[in-house]
Length: 434
Length: 152
Image (cartoon, each protein chain N blue to C red):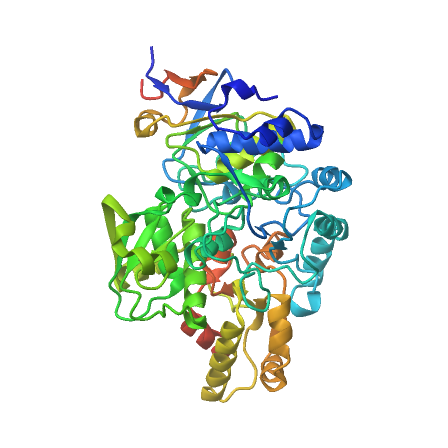
């Protein structure tokens, strides 16, 4: 047990009471974990969590998910998060949507054999509802949209960076398990991105590309350079809208996801676009900041640096996964339109590569109501799934297989090959990958 | 007497072990991607983006690194590799520990009762001095001594 007399963090009496066992050994253990976390982050104190959570692990996969036994211990004690939470996408059980082979199906079923119990435990611990599974929870159809300055304890790196940067809420990048524990105790350490000082930028990133760059490549470049620091990005405001329209939020979501994957970026500011940059401008930059200039050459070099991890270097691509992170409604329509135009241009009715678009259950539900667009895409061979494309690779059965993606995040964790959107549309229609 | 560095002991321990050095950010989830299954007997680094550690066995080693990077799934990864017995012996951070590593390593310690000794704030000079294969002595006060350097 922690020796409270030797802590640097200041605890309130009610926090000390829990730490000393006043509310039982399980809450004591949770508080001990959260307090030690605060000590490690050099937090002055704990602060109350003020809004719903979003957590990273929705699968029962051993090694990535919290152990069932740990969750049962929490649920059996009647513990629940202070606010209902949303959760990353479900494992890929909707086989009819995924173009997976029978042997992959069998492994997926075996890998996630505890999923029903896991889902049940998540509901008991505070999951908002059965449709709350997505890595894009701030879409209006999903509705986990914290207000500016709300203190949160989110995990899922892609969501934490969006909540901080685009919504102006405040969360550190919490890991799996710690996310549930802090949200049960209702407190998180006041450190890092929760503080004004921690939200100041140490990098000025100057964009000098001829056009709006690919957000996934741009984010990867920024993440690789600034690593965990906060970048202040200039020259994107001529393309993006401070009213945060769909085009802007989609761009920032994709860029932020890549920043968080290739580095550990938890917050970025875009001049004249994101809320804190609109309010404070370059005052957000600390004295002595570093500068990074990104031009088309830099992004091209990054693209060419991605190794091809397919087992056969020149096969026909067999599948394409689009939507890591999950697509917005606006993005679904972008793909629908781009695919239809490309099919018409090539006088074709069906894509040459089996393609899946991934989005939140509620977003897909709305999209499918637009029957003419939905059925046109279905007839072209496009399928739609609310699952997580990355989990399909965890079977190891499609590692090295010729699978394409528009996601630099999926590329980073799997053997899928990244191709930027416009080139990918062409590849889907022709079957040819340069 | 080898060089000595003083850091901050977050999860203290007295131990001696062999260094594996990553001068770039250590992506926890990608590194242990192939070491999370029930019958894992070792922990070969699976992060193809980490040219220093890719393919090398991290089990029982002392990982020397600036910070960790990547997915927040890493939180549960530490708990898993600790419970499987394939975890590194210690994690030595040149900089202040990041929130993902801190949370994951503390959860593994308290909920799995398996300590992965953790020291941070050892300084950039530490990463410049330590070499792969060096033997390191770590003390519970956060002192790290290079006791047998590969470079003589």
